[in-house]
Amino acid sequence: MDLPDLPAEFSAEARTNVVNAEIRASRAMREAIRTKPWMTTLTSGSRPSGNKQVLELYVLPVFLAFAKEVCKLRHATKPWFSDQIKYTVSEFLRKLVVSSAHEFDRTDYPVHRMTSNMGSLEKFASQFVEQSVEWKEYEDLLLKLDEPRRPAKPESEARIESSNSSRLARLTSLLGHLDDQDHFVTVKSNEPNGKISTIHWAAIDSFLTKTVQYLGSSMRFTFTDDPIAVRSHIRAVRALLEDEIHRISPSQLKEQSRPDSTYESERSASPPGLSSDGPIESKIQSRERQLLRRSYFEHFANSEKIVILDFCWAAKQHYRDWTRWLQGEKAKRPIKDGHKADRAFRAILASKKRPEEFRTELRPTKWK
Image 1 (cartoon, helix red, strand yellow):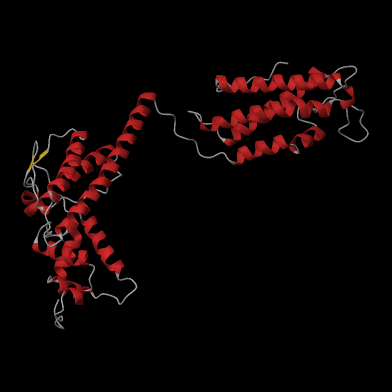
Image 2 (cartoon, rainbow, N blue to C red; image 1 turned 180 degrees about the horizontal axis):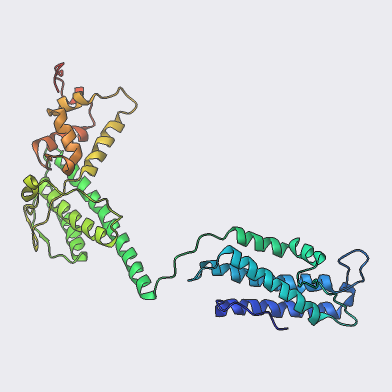
C-alpha cells in the first residue's frame, strides 16, 4: 500500500524506518484477512468487521514509526516546533486511516469507513487510537521535546575540538603532578637541613623537562639543591602550563590580575639555574597558601580555637603580613616565595603545632 507523502526533511534513515514499519504492518494485515475469525466489532450493534485489526495491526504501528521520526525534526538544522509536529502527525494519521480502510476492505472481510464527510476521524476510531499504547508513547515524545539543539559542527571543527579536549585533559593532569612536586619541595624546605638530594632532583628535572618539551619550549634546568630555587623552576613551568590551558579553554582558569608595575621587573626575572627563550614571569600562587592555611587550622578543628594574632605572634610576623601573604600576587605589596615572612608562615603551618607550642613567649596585649 502506498504511504501518504513523507516530509521532505526526512533523512534516508527516517524514510527507511517508516517504510519498514509499513511492510511489517501489511504482512500482519494479510494474515488477519486470511484468518477471518479475528473479525470483531468496535461499537455495539455494528456488524463484525476488520476495523479493529486495521487500526491495531496496521495504522498504529505505522503511525508510531512516523511520529518518532517527525519528533526528531525538533532537533534538525531548521527545527520543527511542537504545533507543526502535531499537525503533521495528525494529518498523516487521518490519511493513513482513510487509505487503509479502502485498501483492506474485502467482501469477506469488510472494513467500514472510519472518517466523516468532513474528512475527520469518526468518534469510535479516534477513541480507539487515543486509548492505545502507541498514542500514549507519542504523547510522551511530545512532552519530552526540549529546545532546539545547536546544529552539528563540521567534521573538521569537531576533530579540532576533540584534539583540544584530549590536550586539555593532558595539561590538567600535568598541572596536578606539578602541584605534587611543589608540595614535596615545600615540605623539604621546612625540614632542618632542607636540601634537595641528587636523586630527588633527577626525578624533578626529568618531569619538568618532559613537560616543557610537550609544551614546545626550549627551557632548560641546571642542578640546584636549594628548595626555593627548585620551586622557582616549578613555578615557571606552571606559568607555561596555565598559559596553554587558558589558550585552549579560557574558562578553565580564572584570569589572574597583573602585578603592580613596581614589582613587575622583579618578578619577571628568570629564576636561578633556569634558562629559556625569554623571561618567564614567576607567579605567586595564593591558592597553595590558602590550602596550607586550611590544612593547618583543620588540624585543630576539634580543639580550642586558634586566635589569629597568637598565630602571627608565634610566626614573629604581624597580622598585616599574614593578610598580604594569603593574598599572594593580588596584594598591593606581595610577599614573594622565599621572603622572610613566607618562610616564617610556612614553618609554623608545616609544624602542625599550636602557636603557644611553637613559641612559648606570651603575646603582649596590644600587639598586632
